[in-house]
Length: 179
Ligand code: FES
Ligand code: FES
Figure 1 (tube, rainbow, N blue to C red):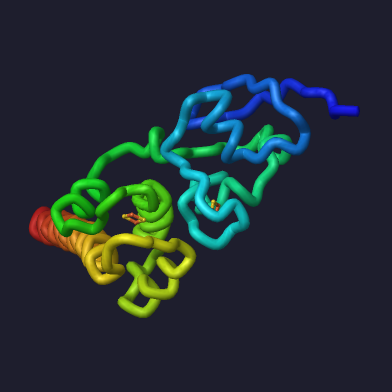
Figure 2: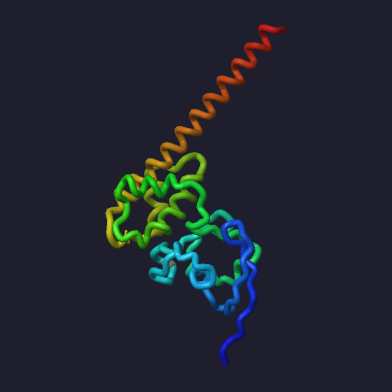
């Protein structure tokens, strides 16, 4: 006898969405089939290729390894919900894809990596990206794109920090002069 469907209330890209799913349905399939969010791709379906990567509560997870029924109460973010296209642009500029099937998974994983503090070094970037497989292009271009964004963001943060220190310093100086 076929199991019964159940109604799941899921948080997807900041919205509450309802899905009528079987208890054994994968998050990957519910995202694609119930919500039309086809950015997460079915590749190996066993946790090896990373093409299905989404964020769950801000952490990159393989959506083929999660049941949708495990996700009520968790914030799921897919490539469609990612704000800002800096990483996507870097992939285009560095020719870091060919067929593009693996690209959304790489970008979700790389975006999570780029938020690490302190900014990841070369070895960490290399290790982190090992959870995604690309069959077409060179990993060197992918790493180049990711490294470029991480570097740009960390320089931006350093510049902000330097600006803040200058502001604090001049404030202190004014205080002394006025005192
Ligand atoms: S489809 Fe999920 S890791 Fe390959
Ligand atoms: S660009 Fe085709 S699998 Fe990566």
